[in-house]
View 1: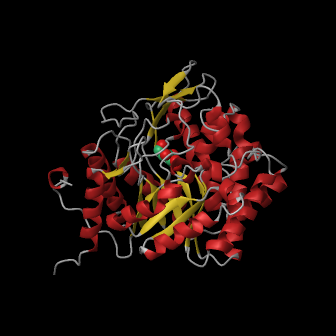
View 2: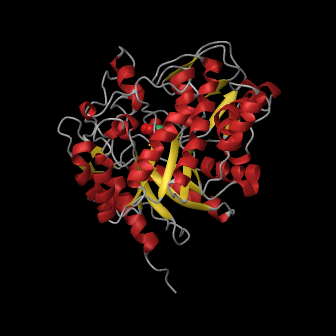
View 3: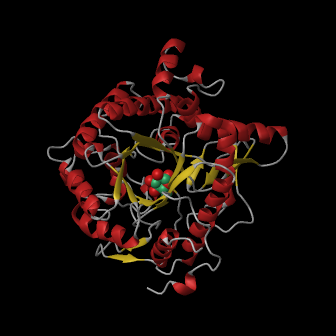
Amino acid sequence: MATDDAMPTKPMPRFPDGFLWGVSTSAHQIEGAAELRGPSVWDAFTAGPGRVKDGSTAAVACDHYHRYREDVALLADLGVDAYRFSVSWPRVDSPGGIDFYDRLVDELCAAGVRPVPTLFHWDLPAGLDWLERDTAARFAEYVSVVARRLGDRVGKWITLNEPAEHTLLGHALGVHAPGRKLLFDALPVAHHQLLGHGLAVRALRAAGAADVGIANSHGPTWPASDDPADREAAEFYDLLLNRMFADPILTGRYPEGIGELMPGSAERVDADLRIIAEPLDWYGVNYYAPTRVGAPRGAEIEFGGVTLPAELPFSVREIEGRPLTDFGWPVVPEGLTELLTGFGDRYGDRLPPVVITENGCSYEGLDDRERIAYLDGHVRALHRAVEAGVDVRGYFVWSLLDNFEWAEGYARRFGLVHVDFTTLERTPKASYGWFRDLLAEQRRAPVG
Ligand code: BGC
């Protein structure tokens, strides 16, 4: 693979010793073998007409279930320290389903790649519902089963992936499974996932886990202007997407005005918050881009493939003057530095070491120089956060493989490795070579 002419020329600054380099995937997006597991809310959702843009499903996806050996070999050649994948709860609920993760973890350990499982990445078993409080307890029971089975080989665990997106896209706006359009009535889904997270941390600790985190999505919120109405709208958006999910975990409190909206009495919410705030060993951040937010415009807005209803108390605006990915997302590497230093300021000593659990972009093609530029810019921006004093311990690229990109189907390609969805052939892209070279360079002993 000719990567040399695609390589950015400025040397990458060195990250601290022991920094964890990895790539991420999720079960529903890559595994396939849907007939060998129980149904999830995503199976039901994709079966409905017009839900997934290209009309596809994840029944086969990358067929990782059968091709995991080939994929682990790609990870080993890439030279990553760690691989973040997710465990499918409906598969674990099916007879013999957990054996797959046993095999995968063995294969990773044999290849010298640390397994980092996420225990929930949106594929809830059909029949369960995050609107129900009991789902949190059911989640913790399932987590105990997985921890007991894999805990002898898995050290690092992630409870949930992006409860904010699962609440917003799946339950408030209805563009993801389970397809509910509840707007603010979706808030119990946030609380129950957070409670599930806290109970899962306890279940993992009870099984002996000593390295536990979460993968929350965050991004800076930029007001559309200095106008007080725009600033107020931006603050509210920041509260909903960032603080509502970080504050309870890191401070044991909801932001002002939010706790009252959560289900149950004030005493019960307080008791839940004590569980939600179980101390973590590290805090995972998925970062893609900042959001520019202004006062509501009283009309529906099309944004990033999602229709935002007119009744929301904010409107999302374009970030102008930036390159866009194929998904239409602006490329703003310094947003990552801003986010992390802002987190340091906001949470101080309460913020445990940070790991970037996802960062990446969708672009077509094998000679994906735009992806290299995106990743290069973001890794440098991350280093600036380290220099500014944020304790960052790892960085995971989203994603190893092109995959089933939820409501976008197979139309968006986030992989370092191209997947031909007809033949399922894997072909490393230029960015795979770039990342491999970066890792090799980072490990080389410093000169002098
Ligand atoms: C999710 C991934 C998704 C990626 C790109 C993240 O929000 O965790 O599952 O594929 O973004 O959209």
